Image 1: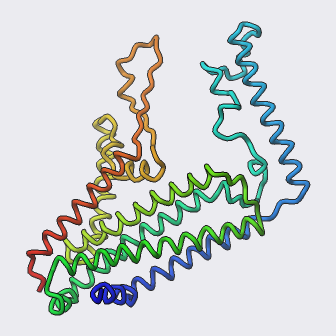
Image 2 (image 1 turned 45 degrees about the horizontal axis):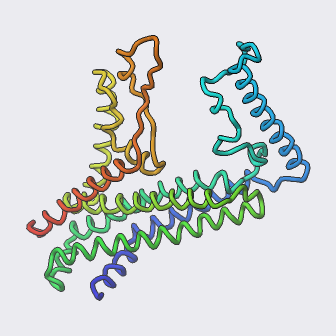
Image 3 (image 1 turned 180 degrees about the vertical axis):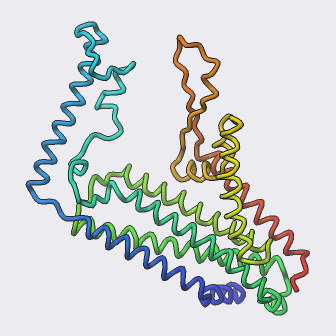
Length: 337
């Protein structure tokens, strides 16, 4: 416990951590101010007009469905100017995930139920950056300055010391992420109550928001461990920054361009960004233009393919786990002076 308490104090005392906290608060303030300026509580006339538009939109959807059913039954001729799906269930309003609501037709109004998800992704992106940079600087600065050597004189067990550092880091980032999320979403909930609309907040909304947050928190912790591991291997904070920059330029940009030139099938499966997106969203869909090249022209060919959260999580865990394991293995035997 003394080791963990000492690591918490060392982490809290770092100027870089304090700077990142200030930037986090500044980002919150800017986002809050922007939302307040761009929103207002709708008047009774605005809501009434929106309700009329909702009714018109639903009526139009029902008319399109009835048109499709009658054309399929031979009761009406085909109108070339109207969309006719292969299956009328595609335009059945009863089968839609969500029907139009009043908030869809209000301009300049912040609706918590519609914008909480995108706002949460913004928070997760900042926390991922925060965790990676803090994790890299936390161990990188100690290795570069000799702080780890001094700590080992007090507690001469390398793996215990490194494990305490990583565990403390992950615990602090988890706690900070939880507090930041409560403050962040609570602020926008208050804005919705006073200068906007809460929106449609049913059980499925909260379940979806909780799922997004849970997946985002896992990504934050993996990014933190990854930054910690790379900096441990490179013995410097800049090693983690250089590794990310090199990967983005050489692989995400350069290799993707080469794959397009040589016409490689499904290049998105080789990109880490694909699996990050799939994990956060639950799944992502791509189009493979190779799939339909040899297909017959008389049949429908679906060239899309989907990457779900399960393989995405395996890829992310494998990457973070491999880097962290390598960092512990190298730290155990390497000369630290």
